Image 1 (cartoon, helix red, strand yellow):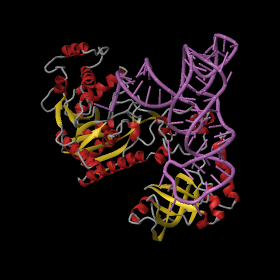
Image 2 (image 1 turned 45 degrees about the vertical axis):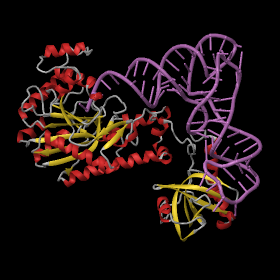
Image 3 (image 1 turned 120 degrees about the horizontal axis):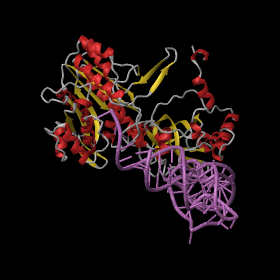
Image 4 (image 1 turned 90 degrees about the vertical axis):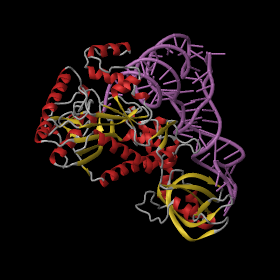
Length: 513
RNA sequence: GACCUGGUAGCUCAGGUGGUAGAGCAUCUGCCUUUUAAGCAGAGGGUCCUGGGUUCGAAUCCCAGCCAGGUCACCA
């Protein structure tokens, strides 16, 4: 790479050498600043034109624009809080220093000290009386006017995206606040945050294909978790009555505007609660986040008005299908299969009736639900961890929360009958044997835990990324992930030698201490 | 996985009925001490995504592939 630099990169490296030749460290160790860009704008907002601050301030940041005028020049310095204009002239800092200043590039990080004044054009500006290079930038920034718009580049080089597109930073600040607020709300209600294993021996807690890994020393395969569910329920067995975990899960599936192979989930379990209680909790958590971050419950997503004012509609899956013109109420399996076939659902002959109902629902209901809706009471076949419905046979007490056609949450009255759970796992084992890669593993340890006894429990999982999409009006999950998954560019792929090291037998591998 | 669209200078883009590549910004040189897409004058910068094919000649046409975005499918 280093031998074939473009002209622009060469020029910057030459400047780096020149700076060093002058005895200046282009990468010094620390810097004391006493103000921020936003702070300067705020503190000196009252300065009149031509008026100057009594005190000096020191700020640091990245040079984002430059307008040279011979022996004086303007620039904008950007820090985490925003941008402020700076003005340097040779008279003030001396010829030697000004020569250095003049050669600074956009992208360089500097610290500046001086009084603040207001220019003819009324902009609050720091007059540079001294400055220091804090980091020489060797890579040119994108164009100042159009910026960085290429989506691929924005995702691959998120650091540049964050520098030049302030609204991107805003999304991630909001994301952090949403998560923080949910955490705080739960803690205030007496929930305990916990961490459970990410490397799992078994696949469980959701219908999804896992990523596989391998532990060399133990000589055993491991799965990256697809959900923390089964561990969290063990904790309820152990006596924690209100627990939650916010963490990453990994699902080996396709990528789309609402799917990334790794994503953040929050799972919450509350003993002595059922799914009706959990619906209320869901409303509470999401509306609290919306109020805090947006200040309103009437939001707009992709140009569509969505009203988050609770209570949200509760609609049974059967009823939702009926409203979509698919009436399966009181019908037997044969009749439902016939309806599915009429609706163009083909190739599911050998698949269970529950799955067929799910396909009908996915295809004809979910995408059309725009306002917040709890779809409740799902077929038992596709819900192996949910408790049988107290009234409806063949169904479980489960809900999915749909907003803007996206599933945001999934929850049940948790199955705590160990005998029933064993039967459900057995069914899953059959499916797995028949080639269903998403079926649950038979988890004997989890069954043993249930045999000790788990109180009646309501459980909830919320897709944090999708929630953030909704609350920040971002069209793709990639826009709420700092580093969304991308296929590697050819040059970014691991070198053959590196792969060779990884593939070696553990015995011959030098152990890091 | 299927289909559609795109990939040209560091960035944003134009061009292309086949004749060997352009703009703006950025960069470099000179001038310029209140500008803000600063200005003026000049200069440099390209595997036109990759590989094949057709052709006297391909950035352009054809085929295959890679990467991305979108739609659909799969999928919580």
